[in-house]
Amino acid sequence: MTIPFHKGHYTARFAVSARDVGVCQRLRHQCFFGRPGVDADRFDLLCRHLMIENEAGRLVATVRLFEMASGAALSCGYAAQYYDLRGLAAIGSPMIEIGRFCVAADVLDADVLRVAWGHLTQLVDRQHVGLLFGCTSFAGTDAAPYGQAFAQLARCHLGPDTLRPGMKACETVRFAQMDHAGTTPMPSLLRTYLAMGGWVGDHAVIDRSLNTMHVFTCLEVAKVPPARARALRALAQDAPLS
Image (tube, rainbow, N blue to C red; front, side, top):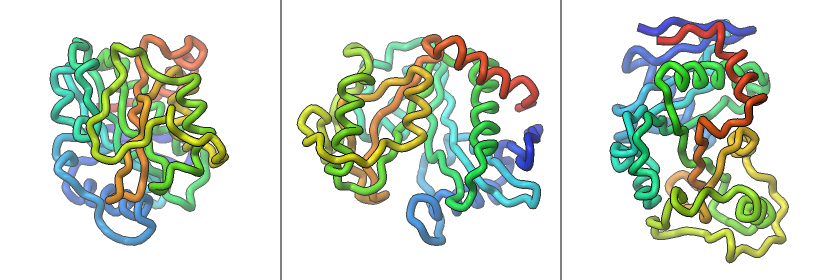
């Protein structure tokens, strides 16, 4: 069962049927590939799919959540294909891998993301989640345009040595080896994580199947700045979710 939450023109709920999941997969394909299709993989069956719909019932945003009881389950997740996560495996608290977070290209209303973050915050509090993580994507497979963005990540936002993931993928870009001339900004989703106190690994993985580069991104819930935590909980307080 899922109880919808309404805010402004939008309703948020979890997918409850194969049809719901299919709608999410079609929006993902449109967002990631720029054309109609179905973006599906084996991890969809392990996840819950959060759906943000408008008043007409159109899906305008989605994100999939793989809920893990502890770091012992990390090897089953999406990120473990590309990153050596042994540093996080000993964490005993619940964690959530966030993936395939996307918003329809023609939807610019900030309430869409507020609804999504309100639900995620409530889920974190209800399940005593200690860690949120995932792969944040940069468009394209050419690292050069992101030189300054990668330099900023290396300078200000690297994770602790004991937790930071190691290299595992075949094609990677080390931030420390980048020419810092490119000025394309980092993705807005990554900026959101960083503003909440999140951190990243020290390299990007080139994913040619999705035509992206992605960076391991982690948010330790206990380290979210108090003012930001209060703001997130204010979004969540009227958001019933099951």
